Image 1 (cartoon, each protein chain N blue to C red):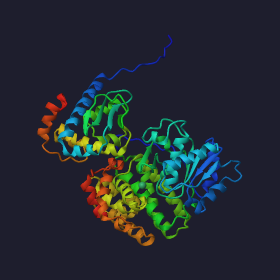
Image 2 (cartoon, helix red, strand yellow):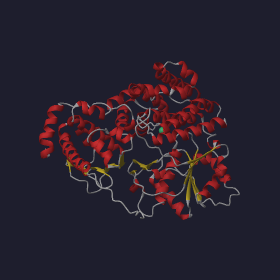
Image 3 (tube, helix red, strand yellow):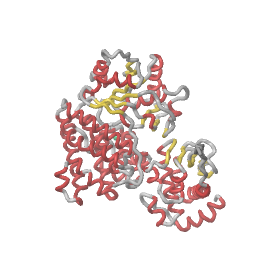
Image 4 (cartoon, each protein chain N blue to C red):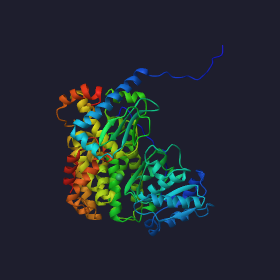
Length: 393
Length: 173
Ligand SMILES: [Fe+2]
């Protein structure tokens, strides 16, 4: 399906492969960075991953401005300001985020603050409030799911006012994404499964929602083939570096897809569930993905059927008559869910993930006000949302 | 003879600008009355904070409209002269013309990147739901249906359409 009009923008340089990190100093010097500030969290340090990053700087002649390793799981304004102070105090001239969603979003927030002489973070909240380029930002993902290394958003909490601030701007796109399978090798099976389902949701929603276009489709389908082949492998054999590299690449491509063709109701429900019951994003994605596709079926049957090709391969696709493809796809997804549940303990239902039935109304209300719903092909009002949630409970 | 190269000043699209002015006025006044009549819009607006302002405008300095919540009710406040809490901006006059005349719905306009949003996304979701309901009052079903994902279930559309066109828009009631 060719849209009558679309836009696609992904200026992020991607450096991907075994030992790719060793090129970090060279890439930084190409961007004019001499004293990078590394932003990360305790989990990354504990897994010994910062060691790998630090070693990459050996014999490079470069000075690491500082390593800030205290980013909390939910990034906040206070943390962003504290890191900005470290950046200035050490005369840094660029940022390297190492971690999952939180250190990456935090580094994006820090970049807003250190790139402006006046104003505070909240002045730049919302869409398109940034008008000029920021400082160089390199992202080294340590999970394979969020795709934040190629997205233009950052979500940062104002813990005093208890609200989440979203920042959307093309200037938040990192300059470089460095994908090195060593960085995801230590991820436990359950997190591997959850983040893999997040990436799969990015790809499938980008492919089925209203902004789909030929370029995002290409990224999405490539990501889906890799995930379907390598996610079960990575869950079974955590040290499989090929599977790790494949998933990290898939997550990056899915990120580029959904950055340009937005996600839909699966994410709207997932964001809301995260806010109300604190269910991790990837876990929520694993639960909601088949439900979201099933809900959109009346509007998107043919497009959803097409996903059987990247998910199950050419032979199964060709052997399935077009009319049965959407159904076959949903069956395949639920077998994937079951496999991940038995092998990695990834819950398939909301109640197993810790949600309570009396929270469903609140989740529904939050979900219908989530921006992700705008690009969902089928309208979902509060009653529809409640019905989907009940099914997933 | 040597050809002379000099700056060009493109003309203005007067007709489309005029139409946009008129439609923004109509939309603003109609929104104000529909917000009184329709329970669905009332429920949405109840969630907006007092003093909340919403602007729709055409970049860079084209026609615009401002809605403001005063004493719990939505008022049409003319042109958007000031900064608003939520600003929905058309990137060019042609896109605005398509949406305002109304040949294209808001979801498609967003999908085609014709609009840029400044401010709180949750509020804009609420506003779009209101706008869909408003369309159901302003236009007959055959015009409205292609503009929305699903026809909003509104009560007494014909009577209320009559009210909006005869009293709401001309007199701001
Ligand atoms: Fe996601």
